[in-house]
Image (cartoon, rainbow, N blue to C red):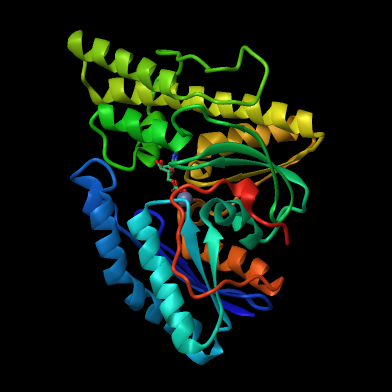
Length: 341
Ligand code: KG4
Ligand code: ZN
């Protein structure tokens, strides 16, 4: 089955062609980062308008790259939520219009299920069951995954998502959007031990997270440094390192707890923050000590992309799931509401 995947939930237009027999044939991405940078974050209306401009050229591009014609496509998968409503509607209406014109089914995919399954596109994919840490700009969740659509939420953030905390911490130090990669870059030059931030909610049992206090610690430290006359690059690097270490250690502690609670030794990490090298190596060490395994996607498939949507959609379409021509998206959508395969 050849599936065209469309991703438009936020500030990236992603398009891909995935074939159930041949694997990923082509994928293309247009990132709107430059468009939103001047505003320090995503401007929803600008995002929607840009998706409209990029979608059809990107579809033509992947068809060319894969050497395919539209009549070969069996179905279309698009991100139906969660995300920015206007942005989601661009992908949904484009998918439904093409599906109607080409006489093929379309299926709305859950964005976080797309992220969760992205490591399946790699050479050594994880086997079910496993524990997943989903860490993106909008979500921080620990999920027990027994199969596609068999999700049990083990824990999540009470306030900011991990990626959001990276973005806000970067912004308050005057760094560019998105802040995650910027913090990671500066942290490489940070002096270990100059600052130490708290590991929120680690001293009590449970699998919930809270990142807003950590972000405030970083803000206070930066403001103290500036008022003491030090607004240097090195001060930013030292704060970036302390912040990243606190997030990474907190996520590692909670992942270890979740694996113990679920009685598992397989961990999947997905979403934009799973591209973070310090997080990957900390989790690799923890799983190495446990004689377990950690799985993640290549960096470009950790952040938003069309390939994960084409893959997730293909699994559900092959199992016979499809939907009517109605164009409907969901800004909020708990993943546990998805049907099992
Ligand atoms: O999955 P994603 O592309 O979009 C959402 O679904 O939200 O995640 C974007 C988030 C942003 O907050 C970004 O700062 C963060 O992922 N991110 C990173 C890194 N690369 C992206 N955070 C930490 N380290 C990175 N290397
Ligand atoms: Zn995402």
